[in-house]
Length: 272
Image (cartoon, rainbow, N blue to C red; front, side):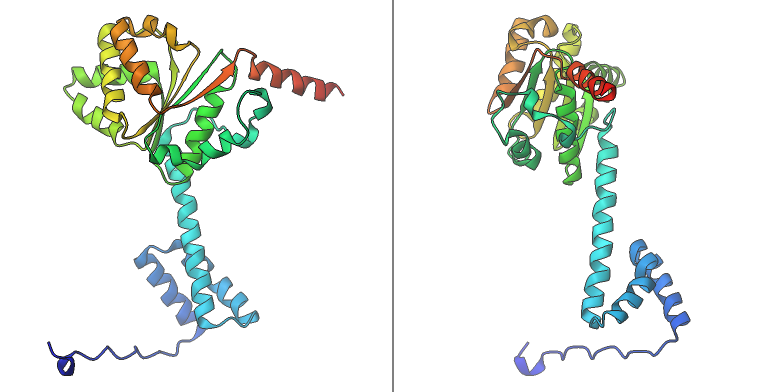
């Protein structure tokens, strides 16, 4: 098509003068149709505030669209966290990093940023019971979910049971595929229970499906040298350790109970 025959841009739509009640009714109807609940709720109040501040039409439009986007982000964060199925709420701000004196400064803040998840790197939390492993696992998983990532928290025993049931129902490939698509799998209580050979092999399928592609964050109260008791087959245990430690972030939470120390600190504060 030559420049001379190009179609002219459409003429601006005519602006219809509406009364305030008619304008409000039109806004509500349009917002329902376009699924803009925040604008539908806040439009009138924001319009009045904008008029008082003498904002331009463009500035008002920017303000109200930003409000809708912010509210959608907040709802998305809530949905992602809910989908992750965390057993309780834990935040990094509630964790006393001084309890881990050997942890380099800034490590937790760096992990909370999620770059390691984008790279598909593993995270392993090792330490005795009560030392904060699950707190960190949930807190970092929550941060990832709030950033819009697909996250799922599950204990090792629950995951193995789910895989066994799926295999019995001939749905294993579907379940493995669902776990493979997660951005972050938070696997808690690795090493707490002894797995039979079938359960260990099914769990290995999940780990292999995510290897160097999508992150697994796991927490265990057993050192790597004792994982053979969980996976029964020494070769399988070695393969699991190899996959979960390659390019991994490994945090030792130690032997001193973070939970017990926190409880004692609260009691001392109450007494004083």
